[in-house]
Image (cartoon, one colour):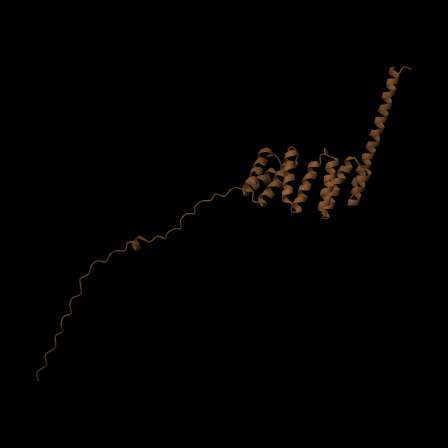
Length: 227
């Protein structure tokens, strides 16, 4: 049989297809087993077991997110962020990357690292402008900026949300924050009112001049009676 005969080519193609189908079947079963294991996991240890047993599966990626949340609930905030960083490094194209970064920023806020959190929120809004996380990341910046008395910056972000994400769920909250951030116009207070005096008291009538009293008349002394 010639090495270029149609029969040989068909045989090679058939062998390749068998290998591909077999791999897909194995992958599907492997992914299904990973999904089943993830569905029954509830603790940090169980999430870690899913990651270890089923690496490179979608379920393993989800397990990183759930593991980080479990760590956060246990007040292990630094560990949670390390878990999220590992997830982002392993699954940079995964659709939950923006969610993982939002969780990282929120964890930084809870640790009092507002400047670092602000930088992450800014990065999310810039890198994922079409994601649901973008307006939420921008609104999260507003809260931090308000706490820093940077009201002008916060106001600009609210206006951007209302312009670019007016149909977003977060647009209503942005409108509310914008009302609270409305600049207060300061003006010179009006002078204190001067109490008015009734006209009759302001210009009291001048009394008419009176005639001077008559001089005292000398009293007549009665004459002595005759005896």
